[in-house]
Image 1 (tube, rainbow, N blue to C red):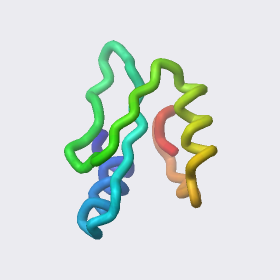
Image 2 (cartoon, rainbow, N blue to C red; image 1 turned 180 degrees about the vertical axis):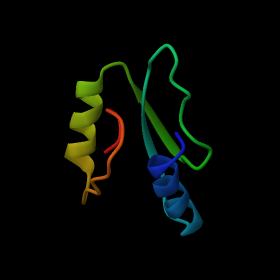
Image 3 (cartoon, rainbow, N blue to C red; image 1 turned 30 degrees about the vertical axis):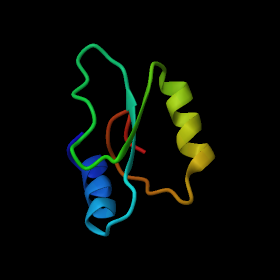
Image 4 (cartoon, rainbow, N blue to C red; image 1 turned 30 degrees about the horizontal axis):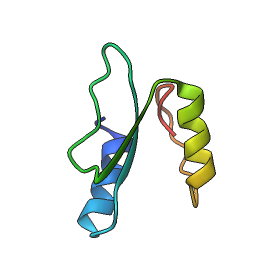
Length: 69
């Protein structure tokens, strides 16, 4: 989505890196942004968070909603 998540994907995209988006399937979720090269959608927040932790090389912690990590 917009904000911090889109900014991170855009930064990777502009640096010609691979931009990965981990989405969540919710009734009113807006979907992933246009800067995502590889998209993976999840049905549950728990599984999505596990994937973030398992494959991340680092973390940036910012204020935000439940899905911001």
